Length: 118
Length: 108
Image 1: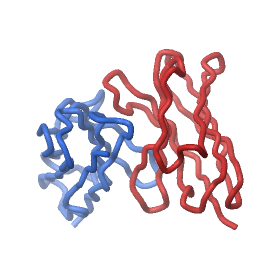
Image 2: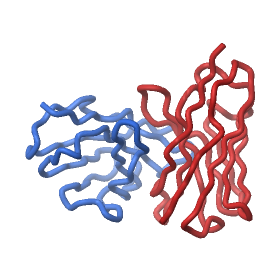
Image 3: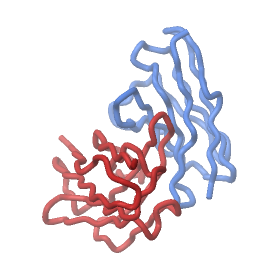
């Protein structure tokens, strides 16, 4: 069974940093690209960042470029999102999602809540 | 950036009724459009990919159609578990991947 489990969310002050993790199981982790998607409270879905299977290709939304860094460790079946210079508007549930065979998000984690507030 | 506009924002229907949800793209996405369902407190679930293909395990009452800029998700007969928010998403011209603003299907 494919599972994605996020962790690392919490309360942080504006300007602070946080690292999110996503532990994967039930599939060949190194064969799939992965994505972070976030959802602000009561709002829609927003794509945040993408990393290809070998980490060769990495993309970011303009809203996080220069502040967030996506990475993965294929030996540990883990995906990460390093978030720096956090802003109030980064407050959201952050989901990791697998890019399926047709380049849609076929499996999602349960999400981890990041709250940026003073 | 391709903007996806979903309508209506809210659809009030009764179980057993047919639901028709619309997603319009600001420029052609060919058939590279997907639909997701999200229930409160849950992660989104992939329903439809490439405009008209049902994802694994998705019931046949869900169908998708369209190409270019205009797409439709149809639920032929609403079950109680279908009341949720639905999002469209494009992967034609990315980054960025973009989502529509969502349509909430609520019980009338």
